[in-house]
Length: 297
Image (cartoon, rainbow, N blue to C red; front, side, top):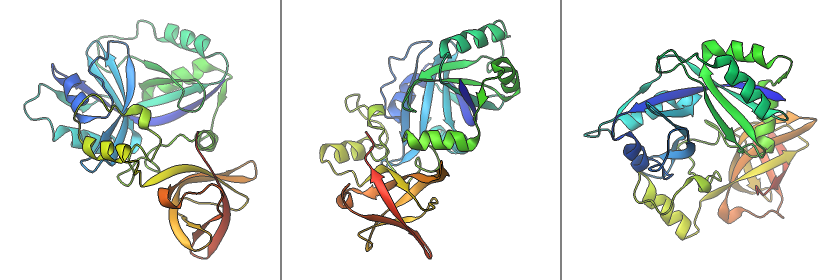
């Protein structure tokens, strides 16, 4: 089994209107979320661009919103300005939280073991409990365990000789499996359809901020750019410009690293210039690299 520790933000939402409020603010239909359930949804600005991608967890006391590490304050500020007459209290959690991502064999056994380690730990404090969810966003099943930072060492000790991944290990895994993350892919220059997040967008639940833009792009099949996987035998770095046939600038690289002797990356290419049989290059200042682009399935 492998595991990786990732910093994240965690907000707590309480009040009689908190579910209805978030249903009006984000892309997924969360009005029916039950205690113990969780879902992923996207928070947009009025232009349909991504503020953040949120994991929402329903707990007996209210909702927990897992934010990207770099977007916690921005997300809190953005949501708070829309709370006018709603019975909603939204605030950061009392302590710093991290996510431990488990993958590989023995997931159920590991979760059971960790649940036993922390059984009875909830002492009435609002943010003392573990939040556990199963996910397949990496292309295979993984388990996310959100916990206070002070408990992460205890969990690591309990996991024993399992393989702790480095940041580079995790980054290679997420790029190979085309998992977009903030701030590289999730930002106010991209929308959820461009990032392959359509499954987290409801087209039937009614209005939310940015809804008209996203509905129009989808109905008219006019998504401006598309996220693609990229490989090269030459070095790639985020921010490199992508050109088609060595002359038409048509995109950029958002995430990149070298793994097993090959550069791998995620990037975006304008839809009108996207041709998986065409020749593309990535360049930065005096550096130019031939790249191969692959469709994300």
